[in-house]
Image 1 (tube, one colour):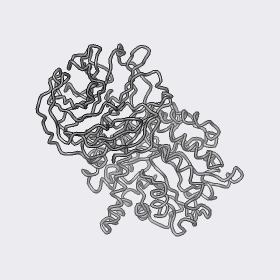
Image 2 (cartoon, one colour):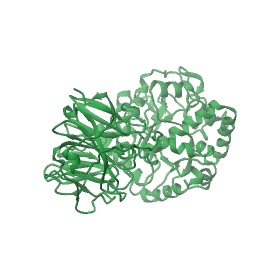
Image 3 (spheres, helix red, strand yellow):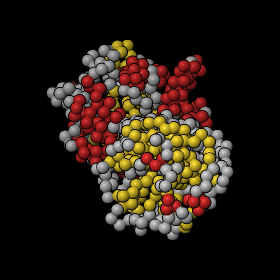
Image 4 (cartoon, one colour):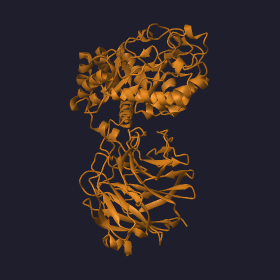
Amino acid sequence: MEPIALRAPVTFVLAVAMAVGLQATPARATAPPVTRSPAEDVFARMTEAQRVGQVLMVGTPATGVSSAVGSAISQQHVGSVILTGRSQAGVSGTASVTKALRAKATASATGGVPLVVAADQEGGQVQVLQGAGFSRIPSALTQGTWSTSTHIARARTWAGELRAAGVNLDLAPVADTVPSAAFAPSNAPIGAYDREFGFTTTRVGAHSAAFTSGMRAGGVMTAVKHFPGLGRVTANTDTSSGVTDRTTTSTDPYLKPFRDAVAAGSEVVMVSSAVYTRIDAKNPAAFSPNVIGGMIRRDMNFRGVVVSDDIGHAKQLAAWSPGTRAVKFLAAGGDLVLTVDATQAPAITRAIRARMADSPTFTRQVHAAALRVLTLKQRMGLLRPNGAVRATDVDEDGAPDLVGRRSTGRVEVLRANGTGGWRAAFAGNTASFSSADLLLRAGDFDGDGHVDVLARRHSDGALLLYAGNGRGALAAPRVVGSGWGALREVVAPGDVTGDGHPDLLAVDPQGRLRVYGGNGLGGFLGGSRVMGTGWGGIDRLAAVGDFDRDGNPDLVARSASTGDLLLYRTDGRGGWRTGWRLGTGWGGMDTVLGVGDFDSDGHPDVLARRSATLYLYRGTGSALRGGTSVGSFGDISLVG
C-alpha cells in the first residue's frame, strides 16, 4: 500500500521518540507562507526608476570605469555593464576594474542589486580581455575542430579566468551558421572573422552547446547570438544599413544551434538587428514581435533574458533615435537594451519612462523584462534565495533541487521548476563520484553563499566537501573530516545548535544521534555531542528544513519496525520540541528526501521513491498531503 499522509498531527508513544524527549502535544506554526522568489522580492522593493535601470546595459572601457558609466549607474540606475575595447591588463587588472564597478551598485543606485558584468570573449579576433592570467582563445573556427569534451573542458577554464576577473556573463557563443567556406569571406559579420564553429548546423550546434556547458560549469553565464542568425548576410549591421536576410524562415534548420545552446544552459539570447523578409519584412529582428515573442518565447519556450545587439551606434538602426530603438525593442518583448555608449543612458531612460506613462501595456512589458533580468541575477548567485528554498537550491534559480548519482558515478542536479515539476537536469561535473558511498546536499557549508555537496569516500571514510558555485557545478573536493565510515543516516539539517552555522547529524553504531557542529567555513568546531539515544531503530532520516515554520530545522525519520514516518522538531538550541507521526505505510519506500518547498506553496515538502516512481508529499506545516507521482527515477540514486 502507499504511505498514508495524516490530515492532522497525531500524538504517539514510541521508544525512539521517548529517547529523544519528544512531547505529547503538537504545536502549530503561525508563520505566513513565503511564496515570492528572491527576484520578485527585490523587484517589489525597487523604485520605478531602478526597475527601468535593470533593463539597460551600457559600455565602459575594459581598462577603467568611465565617468559616463558611473553617472549611468548612479543617476539612471543602470544594472548591467559591458567591458568594451581591448585590454591587456590581465585577470588582476580587470578584477580591479570590475571591483570598482561593483562598488557603484549602491542602495540608492540599483537598490543594492549587483551588476551583470559582461564581455565579448569569443576567441580569435573577438577577445576583449587579454594579458596575464587570460588564455589566448583560438577562433571559433578552430574551436569547432576539437572534440566536444575538449571544448567543454577549455571553456570551463576560460570561464574560471573570467570569473576571477569579476565577469559573470560572456556574450558568446556565436551560433550563426555560415553556409560554406567559400561564402565565409563575403559574410562580413561572422565568416570574415572566423567567428563560426563550422559550416553545418550539426557542428555549430554541438560546439555552441559545448561552449555553453563549459562556461556554465565554470560559473559564467552565456549569451548565445545573433538570433535568428547572421550567417547568410553580406553586410555588418554595425557599419551598414539595409542589412537584409531573404532566406531564413521561422522554422529554418539554421535555428538548431540556438536551440542547442539554450538546451545546454544558455540563459541569454542576443537578437540580431538585421531584417528577415521571410519572418517580418517590416521590422529589424530586434523590433519584431514575430522574432522575440514568437520564435524565441513561444517556439523555443525560452524564459530567460533577450538582449539586443548594440543599438547605440548601429548604422542599421540609424533611422530611429536611441530612445525609440530601446522602446521598440522592449515593446517587441526584449529585456535588456545594450548600448556601448553610456552617454545615451539618460535619453534612453527618458524615452522608456515617457512611454510607460502613456501605456499600461508597455509598463507591464518593462516590469516583466526587469523581473527576467533580476531572475538572471538570482541564477548568477547575485541575489540570495529566501529561507523557503535556500538550503536546497543548488543552481539558485529560486526553486529547490535534488542531487542524484548515476551508476557511472556522474552527479546530476535535478532541477525543480517551482510548481511541482522539473526542468532539464544539469550534469555540472565530469568527475566521477563512484568512489563515494554517501552523498548529501549540505546547504551553504563553507559560508560562500552557495549550496555545497558532501561525500564520504568508501575506502577510508573521509568526508569530502565539494563547494557549489550557484550554477549547479561543483569545485574539486577537499577533505574536511575523517573517521566517518562507521556512521549512518548522515544528514545536513541546517543550524540545529543556534550558532548560525549549518551542522551535520549522524547515527553512530550505538544508535546515538550525534550533532557535528559546523564552523561556517567548510569544517567543524571539533568533536561531537549526543543529541539523542535510541535511534538504532530508524532506517531512514531526512532533513526537511523548517517543516512547521517555527524558525528551526526539522527532521523526518522512518521506523524500521513499523514503517511509520515521524516528525522530529528541533528547538534551535541543540534540543527538541514536540513531534508527531506524519504517516504510516512508508516501509516500501527505498528513498525518503527533504526537498524544500517543491510546489511553491510556502511549506516544505517530502519526496519518496518506490519501484522507481518518485512521489511528492505536500507539506502543510503539520501534516503531509499526497502522494502524487512526479516522475520515474529508477536509474539514479537520489541523495537530496
